Image (cartoon, rainbow, N blue to C red; front, top):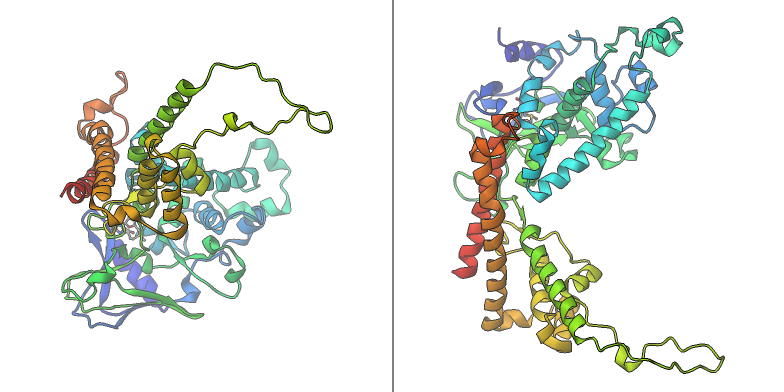
Length: 475
Ligand SMILES: C[S@@+](CC[C@H](N)C(=O)[O-])C[C@H]1O[C@@H](n2cnc3c(N)ncnc32)[C@H](O)[C@@H]1O
C-alpha cells in the first residue's frame, strides 16, 4: 500500500473528511492534492478536526517542560518532531508522507554549502540570514536544555524530569533538529484561538495532517475573471476544525492548490525551497544597480568639495560677551550641500529598491532615489533640493510633467540596470550553468546540482524582470 493510502485510512479514523480530492505524487513537487472528480465552486473539499492538529498544547509534556518558556512555538514543535521516538506510533502514517531529509537538503537553502550564499540575490540572502538566526536561537535553547543526553556521568544522577524524558529519542544531532525545524517551517498553518491570541503572530502556528499536502500557487486578483486563472482554494478555521473550500470549478485529475501568501520568489526559495515562474507577487531587489550610482554621486561631490576648499586661513576668532570663542560657523564656513545618498538616508529612502510586475520600472522608493540623483546633483544647485523636497513632502512631481525630465530619469535607471545586468546577473547565470565555474581549487563542485539549478533559475527570473524594465524604459 502506498504511504498516502495508509494516511487516508488513518485520517478517516480521526474524522478527517476528504471530499473529491486525494493526495498524489506530483512530479517535481513531492506530494500534492488532486481532484478525483469534477468539483464545483464553493465545495468544502477537506475538513480537519482541531483534535487532529499538532499544536504547542499537544507537545510531549516532558519536552515542553524541559525547554525554556520563551522558546518559539516553531522551536517547540520542531523539538516535538525531533525528539519523538522513531517511528512514532501516534504519527507514523502522517510522518511517512512528509518529505525526506534528502528532499529538504536538496531544495532548502539553509542546508546548502555556505559558499553558495554569495550567489543568492540580495533579498534572498537577507531572508536566509534572518531564518538562520531564528533557527540558531531555537537550537541553542534545545542544546542547553536537559533534552539532549550529555555524557555518561549524567545518567547516574537522573532527575525526575530526565526520567520522564526516558522514552524520547535523546541523541539527536543538529541536523536532526534542523530537519524537524524545516518541516515545521514549510508545513504549518496560521491558527488563532483565544489562547494563541496572546502570542506573537509568528507563534500562532499549528501542524495539520493532509492539509499540509496542498501545494502553493499565487493568483492575480486582477485576472480573477479571466478564464484559466489559478484562483486558489480558501482556507478557514473555527474552534472545531480547519476547512478548505474551492473558489472555482475543477476537472477530475486537476491539482488543487492553496496560496501560502503573496510571496516573492526570493521568499518562496528561502522559506519553501521552490521558485514559481508566473509569480505576480515576485519582486527583484535592484539595490545593487542603484546604490553604486549613489556612491558615485557621493564620491563626486566629495571631490568637488575638496577642490573648492580654500587653503586654510588664519582666523582670529571674536570673543563673545562672556569671553568665550564664538563657535558659530561664519558665512564662509557654511555646511556643504548634502549628497543624494545622505539626503536619502536622512529621509528614510536609502535602499530597498525593487522591480515587480506591477511596477516594472521600479517601485516608489526607486523613483525617489532617481529623483534624488537628478535633483541633488552638483549642477542642480539649491533649487534642486527644493524640487526634491517638494516631491517627497508634498507629492509634487515636476519630473512626471516634463517628457524631457522623465526621459532623463528613465535613461539613468536603464543605464544602472544595464550595468548591473552585464557585470553581475549574466555572470551569475553563467556561473550557475557552467559547473566548472563553481569549482574551488580542485576540491570539486560546490553544492548539489539542484542547488545550482535553483540559483541559476532565480537569476534568469531576475534577468527577465530587468529586461522587461529595460524594454519599458527604452521603449
Ligand atoms: C506544505 S508542503 C506541500 C506538500 C509537499 N509538496 C509535500 O510533498 O509534502 C510545502 C512544500 O511543497 C513544495 N511546494 C509547494 N508548492 C509548490 C509549487 N508550486 N512548486 C513546487 N514545489 C511546491 C515545497 O517543497 C514546499 O516546501
